[in-house]
Image (cartoon, helix red, strand yellow):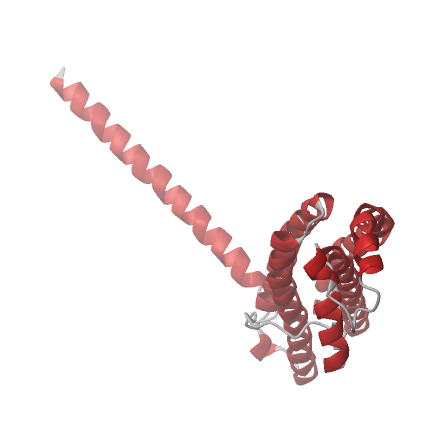
Amino acid sequence: MKFYCKLYRLFILCYSKYRMGEIVDKIKEKAQDVKDTVVDIANLPLKIRILSQKFILELNGALAMENAGIERLQTRISETIVPEARQRMELHMKESLEHQKRLQNLITTLGGVPTQEKLGLPLPSYPQDMFKAMTDTMTRQESELKKGEEDIILEKAEVICYFMLIQKAQKAGGIFLSAVEPLTLNMKDEENMAEWVKTNSPGIMSQLWPKIQPAVVSATSPYLSQSPAQLQ
Ligand SMILES: [Fe+2]
């Protein structure tokens, strides 16, 4: 009986080792697949190599934009006074994290290094005195509307950035065509977000207006009287 038990244990041990070997082989196979999808830049013709480097730079530009956009989105989510806008921004945050991943994958596949840097967002930079007058006199509700205006500007800027990248990938052709699909997915999300902010802005304005109007009426001249922000 003892002999059969030992034989059985030995059989289980051998079988586990065999299965383990099979699993390791499968993992190695998968790793090789991933390695094969990464473009070996050094072996590409010079023209394609230069194009790749340029394209990687452009993709990193888009990634730096997403990195900066995500940071701003975090601030907007924590500061907004409109619940439905917060909810939509939270969804867009998830989408933006996915955009980052797609761009990082594209850059790595082309043999580049994804950036962690953030670019300066394309927002209006007002003259100093105008900006001071605005921030000194704005109510929280007016400030929310101004931020909503900036939301549309940024989302549209992201759409244009992806639109141009897609055009370039299509023009370059060859290995760059694989970038079209992930870039299009990113662009669609940006378009939907821009559309959501635009479509919902009249409703948000109606929601905020009852608090803006009395503050504006009380402050006969925002430059001469008390700031509406102080009247809240
Ligand atoms: Fe966005």
